[in-house]
Length: 62
Image (cartoon, rainbow, N blue to C red; front, side):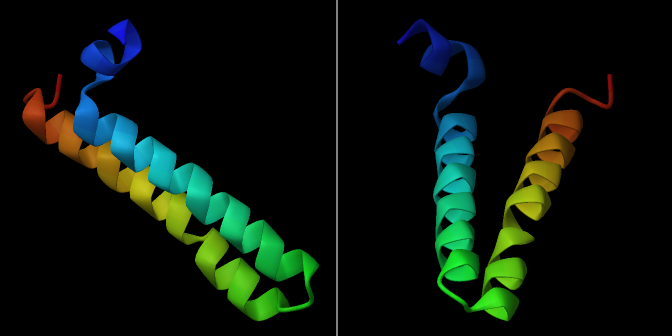
């Protein structure tokens, strides 16, 4: 619970969402749907980049 307080609920939710996205992308890729697996797999780094951007904006770029 201390971890959740430290990073915040929204960030923890987005990290959990990234894990789910990676698992779905791997499932699609390994079952033969390579194009959709790669497409969905690119969502996770995009979401992580957006999280970093929001954190920088929230803390004034420090």
